[in-house]
Structures are given as structure tokens and as C-alpha cells.
Image (cartoon, rainbow, N blue to C red; front, side, top):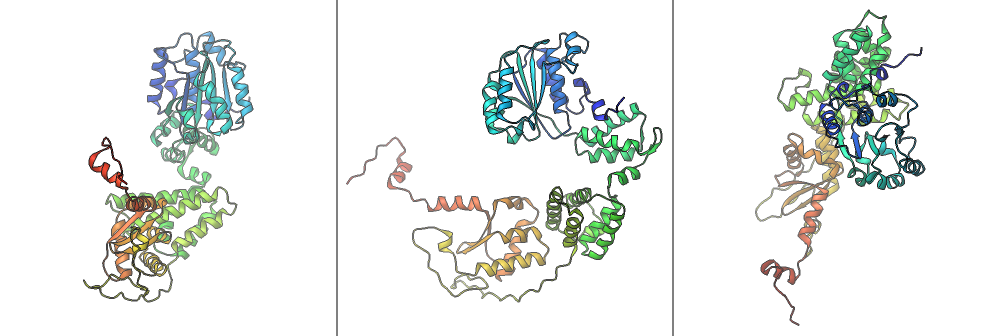
Length: 507
């Protein structure tokens, strides 16, 4: 007999078997008990957490002749018939491979036929977000008003890609990722039944690698199960070696080399990992997680290792951002080792840029006009009646000032601020310095010490204090639009008298 994968063998057959989704299961069971079943449901969440399993259980429960507390009994003729491969009342459709309008037209024709066995004919459409725009439009009317004997159960990992018209016609259920403890507990139950022995720490590692997905966890368990014969204990070290996972000590050595700017030491560690066959993708994934743990400890004022005490939160953000970017590229890159090594070497290399001397700004007095260093002697009169920041701005060399800010930020290892300023626009006027930031950097406003670090850089670059206003470009444009908007005489009168007063212009 052919081997049956563990994730298929232990797929839930009843709501009580579904791990970690008690709230969703309770709502669906209550609907069955009260005979208050809808016509369309949407189950969304990451892969492998039970979306399709819940849909299958629900489809059998609504058709069961004798449901027990909302669960399919599994004993009646309907339950037995629906468990056969030849049954036609529960139809599973993979939208990834049946995504066109022709497939949906065939579905619309088939819904007119009554079920052969149970009360409902159920259509389970998996990865429904893969349907084309035309297919969604064709499905819309049928989904809104299907025949009374038809039930639609949709499943997706990307609900944001579904049209609002589809979402509004479904009861939506978010199937949540599972915790490591929930996954480990289920894995332990499976190993006990299968006679497989793992060290407790080895199961912890597998549960961690599952990333919230029960199916991924069981699949990893299945892969590692044959590292030894049944009855022999499989260790954490063996699991890590098989899956290409670096140990905590190895991650600490890499992180310390990056933070300590020791590229030679970093290369030695990477060479060791290469000889052990460690995975580049897992290495970058774990390293980003390692820096994230350090960042969280710093934010919560918890102690960290000596090597990371003097590392700023801003620098850690930069490390995480660049590592995550490289990890995303690995999926489509055949030069994984080169990409991994160059990313980490770049982070660990000391900055050796030559900085040009900065000209001091003249001291500002009450009688003098605020000037910024470096200054271009091109006095500029503000245009009358425009209200524009650009036209009222004090004349100064934006390009040189931007370069100086970027260099200072790099010198102080404020990587994110440096990157942000490269794409920012600087406007100096009588009110102060406006730093117009691209909207993709809006998270910067939430980072610790952002405002203080930015002000310090500006003061050092200008040579004197000035009001600093970091603004998102969208917000800044709205501010200008509001400021520049001219009100007509009619609008000014209505502000005082209200809309009910009749106003007529006298010629």
C-alpha cells in the first residue's frame, strides 16, 4: 500500500479536531444547530491553518441527517456517501487552475441541478483570489442570489485581492495563525500515535519553523521522521542539520561580526556554515529575527549582550530592513550564496568615506535674515498672494545641504534617516526647515528618538538651531492646498451668515 503523508492522514474530520479555531468552529456549529445557515462564506488566512478543512467539515455537517452538537455524525447514509470519492454534492474547485470566465459559466449552469444525496450542493472554491476580473463579475450574481439548495464556501490566503462586491456578499471568517505551543502539542500527539520519538527541543524547533501553519509543521515532522528508525530518539542537532538551520551560537557570532564591523570574522563564520550545508534563506530569516529580538529588548529597556549595548535602534531597523529585502530576492535568485554574503559583508564593513569640511553658517542676529550653510548669495523675494512654501523659501543650496545631512547620518550610523533624507525635499523659510518625506517612510515617525536625531543632524548641518518640521509629502501637499485656496466673497459671507441667507452681488 502506498504511503499516506501525515498531513493527509491527520487532516481534521470534525470541528473538534481543528486546532486553534474554536471561535470559528463554535459560530458554524451554532448556525447548524439553529438551522441558520447562510448561502456564502469566506475563510481567509495563511496557508495550512485549516481553511479548506473547516469548509469540508461544514459542508458535511449541513448535509448530515443527524448532526450532533453541530458536528457531522459520520454514521448516517449521507455522511457515509459524502465521504466517497465518487460523490458529486461537494465540489472542490481550485481557482488557481480554473480561474477563467468559462469555468465560472460552467459552474453557473451546474448550480441549477439539485443535490443527489443531501440538502445542499456545496461549492468549495480554494484560492478564490486567483479568479480573473471577468470570472468574478460572472460569479457575482450567482453568489448574491444562489438557488436555495446551493452553498458557496470560498477560501483564500489574500482576501485583499477580492473585489468588495464579492466580500460584501459573504460571511467572512478570519482563520488565525497557530501559536508554536498549539503546533507542538498537535505534533506530539501525532508522534505518540506513530511511534516516532523526538527530543522536546526538536519538536520546539519544528513548531517554530512552521511559522503558524499546522500543515507546514506536520510536513516538516514527516520529513524528519525517518532520520532514525522507529523508537530511536531524534535530536535537535539532527533536525537542525537536516533542515539546514543555524544554531543560536552561530547567529550570535554573525550578528556580533556585523555590529562590530568585522568582515573577516564574518567570512570565517559563513565559510563554516557553507561546509555544513546551511540554508541561505533560513539563515537570513533567522538573522532578521535575531536582530528583531535585540531591538525589542532595547525598546523595553531589557539587558542585551555587551556586543549590542551601543547599537542604536535606528541601526537595528536598518539591518532588519536590508536583510529582509535580500531574503525576498532569494526566492527569484540563483546566486543565493553571493547575495547572502554580500548583504552581510556590506552591513559589517566599516564606513571609510572622506568628508569634505563644512563651511560654518554666519551667526544669526535679530536684524539679519536666517541663512543656512552653505549659502548662495541670491536673495529671493516671496511671490505675492501665492502662499507657497517654495516661493517664500530662503535661498540656499538644497543639493549640498541634502548631501551633508546624508553624510552626517551615515557617520552617526543613522541608516534609516540617511536613506529617508536621500528621497526627501528640504524647504527652508521664515518659519523653519520643512523636511518633506516620501509616504513610504511614514513608519519613521514611530521609531524611537526619530525627531531628536533629525533635529540634531539639522542643527549640525546648518550651524544654528532652527524649527524642524518633518512632513509626509501627502500631508504637506494638503497643507499647501488648504493654505493657497482663495475664498470668494460669497464663501466669506456664508461663513458669517450661514447657507440659509440669500446673497446677491450688486453690480
